[in-house]
Each structure stands twice: as C-alpha cells, then as structure tokens.
Image (cartoon, rainbow, N blue to C red):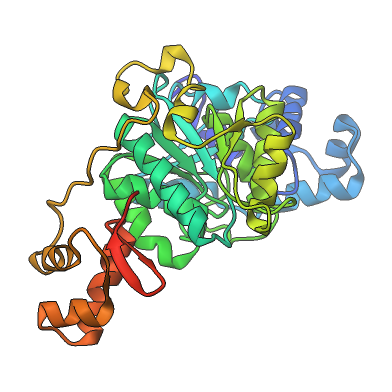
Length: 378
C-alpha cells in the first residue's frame, strides 16, 4: 500500500466511499477541491455546499452518510476475513480500474487480484438462464479456464454462477465482482462457490461498504468494474433490457470489445446477444472466437491449443469423482440411459440414483434430454 497515504486519510476515504448515491468521479472531484477526504469531513453542510457548488440537501446527505460509517470497523472486519481495502494510489489497485472515468474510491478485496499481465475475460448474462445458456456458459468458461484465462463475472444466479462454477470445477481462478459488501454473500446459495473461488486463487471484489445489502441500484454500478477488468466482454444470454447489456454498453464506452453468443430467435433470453450481433458485436461459437480478442501482450502462458478452430476440448478430469459416481458413468457408457435403468445397473434405489445423476450434471459430466442421460459433449 502507498505509504504516502496516511492512516487517517485512508479511513476518511472509506467514510466518503459510503456515500452510495454519489458517483465515484464526483467524490474524486471533492477531494481535488478540498485537498483530502479528511478535509471534506471537517466541513459543515453550508460550507461544503458553497465551496463544491452542491445542493444544500445533497451536501448534508453526504456528510450524514459519511459520518454514519465507522471506518475503523470497516477496516477491521475486512482484515479479519483476510481482505484488503485498496485506494487508487496503491500499487495493488488494478491499473485497468484507474483508467476508467469512475474509478472506485475504495476497493474491498478478498483473495488475490489477477496480475497486471493476466488475460481476463468478462462473462455476463441473465439470471433466468436457459438450458442452452447453461451449456454455452459452462463450455466457454471451462475452455477459457483450461486455456489459462481468468473469468470475471458477477457471482449472481444464472450465467454468472455457471461461469464461475466452470472455473471452480477445474480449480482455476475466477473473479467475482459483487453488488453487496464483502461481508455478505448474495445469493446465499453461492456461499460454497465463493469459498471455493477464494480457495483456488480467485478474488471477490466490491466497492461497497462491508455489510451493504443487495439493493437493486448496486448491480448496474458494479457492472462497470466487470467491464474495466475484462478484455473482451462476452454476453451469453439476456433480454434486450437486461443488466448484461448495461455491461456491454459500459465496455464499449471504455473501448473494449464486446462479443455475444447467438441464440434461438424465439428465446427472449437470446434477444440481447442477437441484438448485439446485429449491431456489430463479435459472434462467439467457440472459445477460439473469444481468444482472438485477447490482446497479444496478455497471451503469454495461455494454452495455444485453444486458439485453433475446431480442436476438441481436453477431457474433463475424473479424478475427483467418487467410486459411486464412476459407477454411474460406467452405467451410462457411450449411449443413453434412463433413471430407472441406471438405478437397476447400480443396484440402488431411485432417490440415490437421482442424487448421483444430479451431482454429475452439476459437475458437467452428464446431460439429460427427454429423461435420458448421456455423457456431456461439453
């Protein structure tokens, strides 16, 4: 961390960062006007309003919100989780975030941020994921992770979760940019995935105070961080007015490449990607289409096999399967089998067989269509 920033100034930055209705670039402007965050907090509302040309009510609200936060408590709770709070002046703060118009005033980080030379691809999409979107997200994110690319997404339900899960299954790093404070996990069912994400060298990032709840307006704002950390950004699924298209718009404004996965014309969840493609976004039908957009200087260390078109994906590692799960894979073989057939082959009851099949579907080893299970092509 930058030693030229005093501990008192760090704590003051954490306080003004809690003014969530204020854009980060406006807060930066206030720091320029007054010389420091500490000096901002020494003002009364009339002075702040006059000197910064703010509406009196806005100035009063800013000071009220800032003084409602205990910055030392924010710091202590973050460090207790093994995390850090970085400022733009710190060496650890990502350069790609410094380069955008609205750089976060304070960045809460759990885990390890990607190195500056690491290739990162943003993958975003709807929470209302379809079976097609689930397959596409898992396939593309899995191939990218195996290639050596870090997946950046929002740790939300749907497409985000599928992309993070694909990296976690391979024990590869992935970055979750969340719309809550790092002291919360939302959605709560992703708690185990968040833990695994950190275990395998990834990171959880937020600009929000430690215990911030999942308010609706938090999520569009966090999308600019996903876009800034990524090159390119891939939209997997999403309706025309979905949050994923907000991320795409922000990425384009930053000069980033935006790609989209084409989908069925009668699927509302493919409406967004199809519209992006119509308007000039790159088409993604295989991982090589994404890798083509990674800058040359970020390709060092990536697996060259994945840059070739129509190269079969290396088989999924099966060393983590339990003996019982391997029996299921053997029972399915190279064809298709129903739940009852698999239960009979295992000598198991239907609930046990169904549970094993569900686990293998989640891991990406099996696919089910019309009640018949087969080994996944993805």
